[in-house]
Image (cartoon, rainbow, N blue to C red; front, side, top):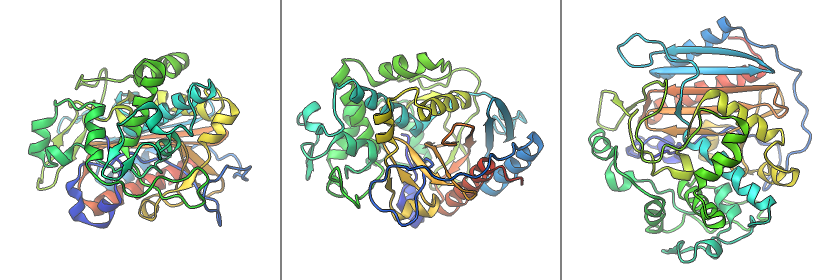
Length: 417
């Protein structure tokens, strides 16, 4: 299942028994600000000079070596100009380079699509961010201290619900052998929510205007969001994403694979090193239905750039709903170690740039690969990074993340290697 880097994995190697982390995005914090924050006009650095292909390739090769990935691709857009870079192999021991324009599992970037649909429904007055989960899914969030009457749609989208961050490895195991045994197994949204309900919540849900809300990345929260979309529209969340976002924007490589374990079209193989194993496991072919509305989509560099640029440019949401999406809260201290200054809105992250201003986006993690995105507030520049070759090792995980975060910052700021 698509999972974000967990604080426990950053603290203790023992927690690495959990499978690869879920989502990471990009978000920012304004100094001396606490609680909910609606972005104001923030001075940005002068328009950075585009990096040349040679400069970008040099930097990408360095990241590959530092993080010890099996492959990496980067697409940078400056206005209409696109620059690509890559390092590593499409498939181990073949010598074939990483493909440009490939399809890949977008993992938790799916959350931004789902949050956008939910906010479109809010704009249409078909539901409200203040609606309790119980209104749409009676009796679903209940037991062990979980209470759907107190959790709102806003809580789900902003990870302030407190719902336990359950994933299926709790039942299947997190070793290479366990992955092989369960790679084609189907888990539906009801299975994910039921698994979360077997645990007490991590904390009470935040009130709407809580100045210091507690935050905890929860995939089951977004699975519930997908279930609410279906209840409100009578159609699956992926159908709404397709008709409201994918088709209007011409995102030809973005789709929900359902139970199909394959990735269509050109793609790189993904690899993960599981606990207790010294070799790579090819995780390319697998059923990701368990990720559902929390992280099942497959996409491409260009599609993600087009989507995020259109979203931040106001083409998908009215001003009031886009403002609500961009109203952020700080993430917890453990996430700050890997992602300094991160703040989270409604399915959208923000993080400061060293050259001034900030970048928006979202990221995703799955056993075998990661996606990182960054878009300038004015849409003038964007970066999409895809890597293959993940590991359970906490130290190496953090080293790789810091290398990619540094790459994103340098590219967005126009800093040469």
